[in-house]
Image 1: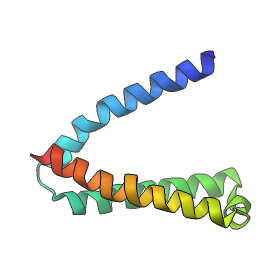
Image 2 (image 1 turned 180 degrees about the vertical axis):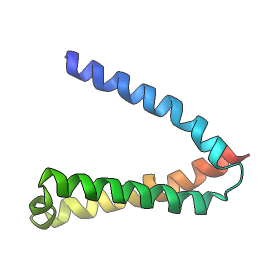
Image 3 (image 1 turned 30 degrees about the horizontal axis):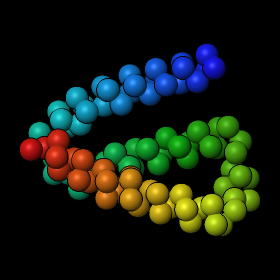
Length: 91
């Protein structure tokens, strides 16, 4: 229970402060360009963590159906949703 509350608090802090940086970054960048920078940075960070953590085998052994669901979620939340979020923040 305590660990869940700690995670929830960390999420609130991250998601509460992130829009400040989004607004600052979008002042001179179009939303699509900002998404390219954001997602490239995230991909590099996660790939690095996967290699450092020694979890590369899990990428290869992943269940394809689960991967498809995650990719659909990424399309909806990470691309389309984030794009319109950036458009809204930029206004």
